[in-house]
Length: 132
Image (cartoon, rainbow, N blue to C red; front, side, top):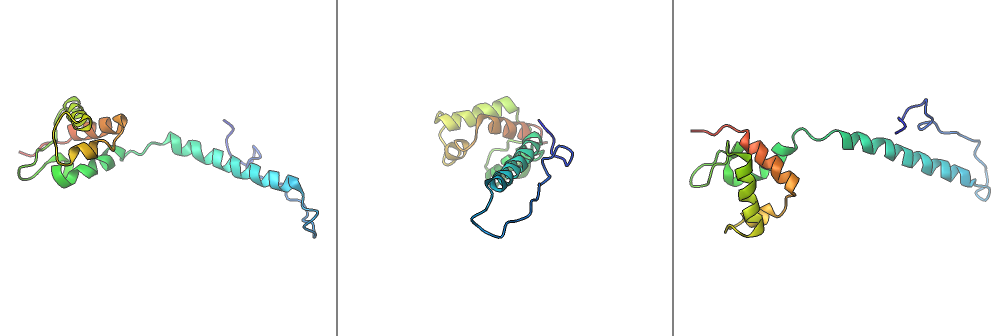
């Protein structure tokens, strides 16, 4: 991949004297402008794709807080999931997702996650300390 920098020419714009007539508008100007736009997009995309969100697991798990409590420590009759092994959580979520486990809302929530997201969520809750 070519880095975006003034040395590579990706950020330079070869300015020509503008014509006074619209009829004499040069197609090369449009091509240069489009080329810069695509080069800028190409330079911006890999940087975003290379830096995953360090809080993604926590952010995905935040949707569980309404029922299972902050960091998986539920109150009342709801099941606490803090400190539960990740493989057990993954199996439970997959059971809800596949309809093998009855639920009021978990079957709908679980269908909204990809397998990778479920692994992140399970890993997050497995790392939490259960309250006693």
